[in-house]
Image (tube, rainbow, N blue to C red; front, side, top):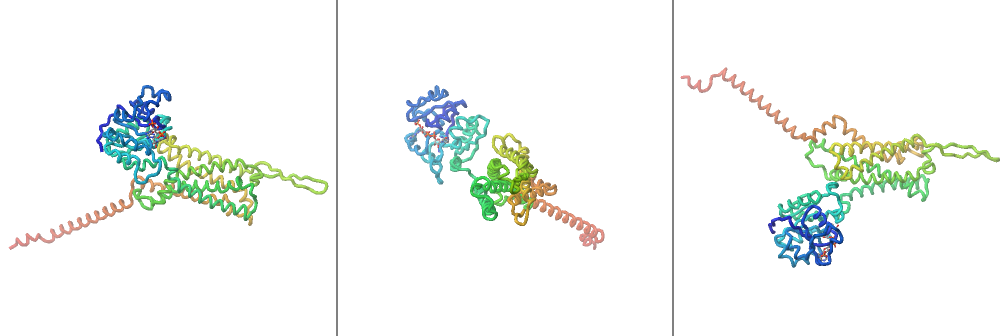
Length: 491
Ligand code: NAP
């Protein structure tokens, strides 16, 4: 491995593709002296494409490598072999590899592959997580975008981290080049960490869906196929949403309880709880997404035909020649229904605030207390409003409950069971005696340590008492019997 002396004066970028040009522009804007290497330098009139390239030299790859001390390889892995002919002149240079994997390679990263091809060159993995578009367009210091840096040379890593900062990104020093395996996987991950949340959503949805279909189509037979896409599907969607919202807030109370049980904050949570805690963001976002669908579906179907239990019906008597006919005319909404709508709107607005503050650029503007207030405080209040919305939604039906229509099997009632338990659990956790104890644990109190020190202090006080007793008895001995030596001294 070359112990390169880093000179930032001339930076060579090999490749005039999307990424090569994007990083060149960024480097030029940051004040670097850039030289661009291409297989066809005479054909690359870059100044015509962008004025920023006016005065920038586009040279052959060989000349670029010879001129620059530090290089960026903005080419695809499949073309790395074409650079083998420059092995000698690459010796002692620092090369930033920005490549991403075209095919997944579990055993070796592109950067490690390059390092094995050019053993005398110092390779750094960086910038691969930034797209060419973001490299060119993302604002400076307005958005935080992390750039992961890995290299076997710590000095070079430091220099590249400084360069990352100058380009307006946030460097993350990942350590040795081996770490590039993980760094190269980052841009090709699809919703990493969301798998469990999607699976749980699907499971909950399937349960509520089967229940709703069974209830509406098999037991009550009140709807036909035409009402399936909006009226029927709306039920499992809103029930899944409120259940997901509840299980987004449940793990924080479970975690608190676990810490109280362990008596310390230093013991690791069980794996399932750790995963559950980490899945809160994705669960909350999926819940918010489903709530929006529910709101749109309900708005489209809101009317006396779809929701007869929400409206007051006036009967109009029509007397005809032969008979009397009652005509039912829908009037205003019932107060329970209006209240349900109002509570639903408040819940939606609170959830909207929650969703917005989860966006990194917004989250970064909040301090720790504000973040906690919104995410935990507003979240639980939003859950409360969702529960209240569902209860008021169910009230008109529950009032008419008969033997045939039980409150217990109403969808609104079933939907609020888990959320209500979640809120009750939270209320229990914020009771002063519990909350204060948990606060103490989170501040570093350790039950075992305190028991040990208690035992120690009691054993110390025991020792002290013993010592005092011994001393007293000795004093008594001295007083009652003369010392042995004294006795011996007596002739
Ligand atoms: P690209 O548009 O296809 O450009 C690749 C460039 O490589 C070509 O323009 C070519 O420039 C140069 N090259 C050198 N030797 C070559 C050879 N033997 N055959 C063909 N081309 C050769 O690709 P890109 O999008 O800029 O991506 C470049 C690297 O950046 C890739 O490793 C990619 O994984 C990485 N990356 C890209 C993005 C992105 O958003 N595009 C984001 C992160 C990382 P000349 O014709 O001037 O020689």
